[in-house]
Length: 451
Image (tube, rainbow, N blue to C red):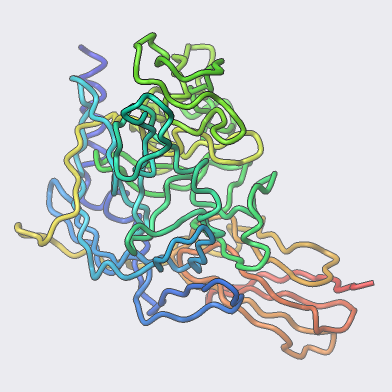
């Protein structure tokens, strides 16, 4: 009981603060950034007349309201599995999230299809599923996956089943509603790349996984608790260094799908095969409770109570889990149940008196981010400039030759983390990359050598 009271006091102190992270962390579009998308067969992005990131943030004592078109600053598409949709404007959708979240001490609430949270750039978060489940036909023969929810006995995992349809940033649309089911970092930035979509349709995603620092705050779930990237402090008290936060769900040791991990006898699913590998269905996993000896393993909701940079007194926090290769790991972000009381939702309007939050300054300077990466070096076709943290401002990226002539330029937009310079038409030699946010600059020499 004393632990529960202390937890509530801490949560009230840090979530209920009107100017706390629940209000100030959103990437508001202050520089007229518009969305961009690729279409299949065209590696040149198309500009959209839609405002990207978050448009407005308003709050009361208990709620924050985030208005967004649901379009990120990074390039979306194409979706190469035949998905006919594009990422389209959600027309100023309003997300209402609690500023004073509370633990659900009763039966946990399952995550659901559709939106279960929102990232700081206004893009929706979905859970693990893709809305398809396995069901046997009436004559007892395998009938295959059925559209819609089917019988909801063996629920298909979107990350496995729909990998071919994710864009470079690991997102895709549902009827135009662009969303992520998983860690929103680009495929080609993983340690082992499992999709080649970025080879032609490069994008950067919301952040870059950095194993040397605590991952940034990426968003909030519908219960009001924060969602972080893949790395955090090893120990809940903020000590122990930086480690990868690990899922406590393991693949079961099964060859047939006749019962659940708890022994429940259910309608048979398809046997494990190359077509339906382990992990194809959510029920292929079992939860192994964490112990005191494994503090970097998360609970059944994919989170834990811990100290984070934004919540130095502690908070319950979800983490976007990945494996050792930085490939997404079930349950990916939030789920399969919420830790807290789910009170957040998308609402048609605001029906109480609120205050509008206006960002007053940018977050930090380039000098605080001296681990900016410019790679490869030497380069022969493309130079990537990578900023380690999600930032609130734009960055100009320019490439100068040895005579000081500007030969290439790009922009890392607010809410993005990477820019690419195509140098296939440049002569061999030494060049200088200059990055500026209008306050200070970062420079680095890079050699172009195509031999």
